[in-house]
Image 1 (cartoon, one colour):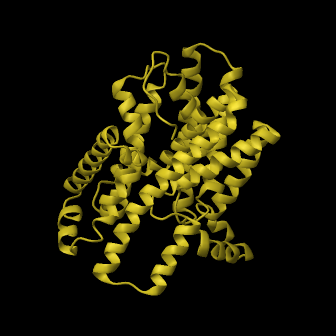
Image 2 (tube, rainbow, N blue to C red; image 1 turned 135 degrees about the horizontal axis):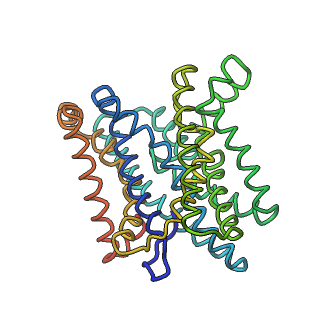
Amino acid sequence: MEKAKQPGAASQNGMIDIVKFLCSLLIVTAHFITENAEDKVPSVINYFVSLYVIVVPFFFVCGGYFLFRKIFADREMGKKHIKAYVIKLLVMYLAWSVLYVLFNIAAWIRFGTTVQDVLLYICHALFYSTYKTIWLLPAMIIGVLITYFLEKKFGIKVTLAVACVFYLIGALGVSYSFLLRGTPAETLLNQYNCFFESTRNGLFNGFPFVALGAYIVAGNEKRKHSVGHLVLFNGIFTALFGILFVAEAFLIKNKFAAVNANTLLFLIPFSYFFVRLCLCIPLRTGKVTFWMRKISTVIFLCQRIFLTALPALLPDGFYAGILKGNWVIGLLLILISVLTLSELIMLLAKRIRFFQVFC
């Protein structure tokens, strides 16, 4: 999530903007289907939306790439760039947290709650995230801070090597947790999850992909090839590792009954070549792609208002009738609602300074 700037004549990141926008729509679609209509949609659609696992890595890698491109271009300004970036994300996270906390409080008032539930929520908020999905923001903050300090001290290659080790640990805590069954490590993982919810966080997920984004910057500074060569090279390896991570997900889900397939090993090389492929396609950033860049982050963060926060306050019959009655209508309603609110937030941000903290 790089800080968006007005498109200039030299900006050639239009493909990144388009893919980011499509990714934001994909993850909203995936969340809706898996939570409301998984048993109703055709299998081919179910398999397609399972590709949402590429979305969070893509956001992390792109955020790392654009931030460290500025840092590597002007090392003396590195701390200033990091400080500005972290403050922006922290303020954004606090703003969205307040909004979602208000929804939670409204639900507690309407339906009642217990002291234990409130304490569990507070613990979850302190150690993981105040609400589903927006964990991306604190994870990004942790990722850029670790990457910056390690890269400055040890260089980008060592930083990436350390990041890969952390990713492997994170994978053992999520997609590959079946390897720990019946071992003392499983008990340790369960104790860890009591506080930190998941290893899919800033340390084991954000940091590796942010470091990968920084590594892409370093690699792009050294390699100079024709556009055609770069597109072909990165396209081939994107397709190859795309097939491999899909096969990996199918294998661990069907043969080893993995809990989920979010932290796949082949996502690392796939994300590397996929982002490089998008970067080497010379599509100039214009008004439309700039709008896509801006709104994609807002879509990602506001989707939970319509997926979980509002439904939690609505009567069960109303919720089931609209969202779960017909999955096509329900999905269209969710997408239109999320896009409309996201655009409204962006319009308000242009006129009222307060709303700038949300985008």
